[in-house]
Length: 235
Image (cartoon, rainbow, N blue to C red; front, side):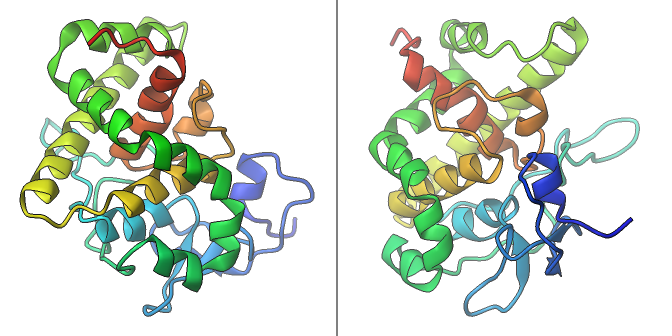
């Protein structure tokens, strides 16, 4: 059986593209549309890993943390390949540079990024609410019930909580150190949503959300954005 692009197959993109490179982060084969060599670095990353590895650090955020941090089996990386790995590094100084150096990806993700440009502060506020306030957490969970199986749903909500806590901790630190770039943060959220084939604000199928390895991005795309669209948070 001939090799095909992992993202094309996972997201039912027809016809699937021929493999062009192997993502340095997740080791998946990707076509020219689903993978890119990063300007200034020449490293090849798939578009699913790109927001975590390149855009979040460019926005001033630290690398994703392993989750859970400890346990009988030691550290465990989240489903989808996230959890850190020493690769994350800032590349772009601002969104204009991203759009200039990666024109095809920037154009393909424009609508998705525009949504988060408008809502970037709101979704980060929802992350803080989810991380710190039980009432708001419950309200968001009510519209993001991703499984009919209680055990699976509890695991997803625990991952969402960890993602919200990580995100708001990193955002607050970056803001305090005056290195937060909200334009690139919005780009990271927008590219992440586009990369798994969902429209920002829509409820995300669980199998699509699991493609994102970074819990911070999973929370924004799968929980905060639908909450913004539904206006469920009470404070």
